Amino acid sequence: MLLLCHTPSSLDGHGEQERRLQGQRKANVTLVFIQGKKEDLGNYRPVSLTSIPGKVMEQLTLGLINKHVEGKKVIRSSQHGFTKGKSCLSNLIAFCDGMTGWVDEGRAVDVVYLDFSKAFGTISHIIFIGKLKKLDEDSEMG
Image 1: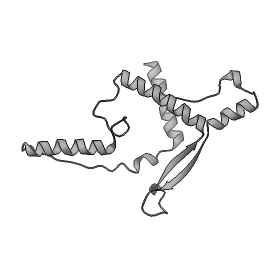
Image 2: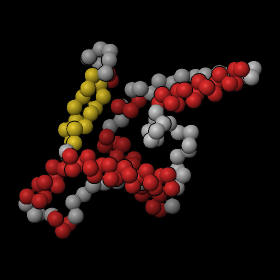
Image 3: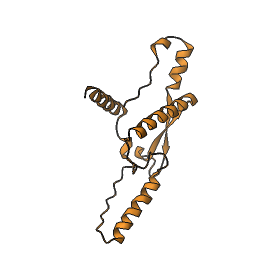
Image 4: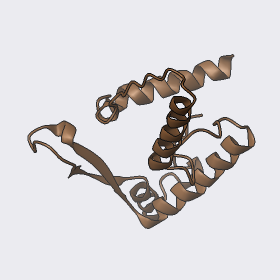
């Protein structure tokens, strides 16, 4: 699913109303230093400062997406990190509990840790949006 915000054609060219809507679709993005060397841009995370109406629209949209995802059972109950009530910490606790149980049963356990902490800031937004549009087009054709 691809969500793109656009101004309805009935509002195009209506001066002040159009400028107000344009302002609601923009966000001030600033970089926040996390840790490490300040010269390394990978040690910064983007933070979006959006307008109040924009935040309200985000929450309404998020509610609709969550309702759809829960209704269609798109995400497994074991998913953590972005699921309401299930944090990355709860994932770590569940994982450790499972591994400890297997070790207690005498089962062989191997664990591999992958660091994705910098993986999400490396793709161009233009490339990413292009790929999302392509996925959306493919799903409409199939």
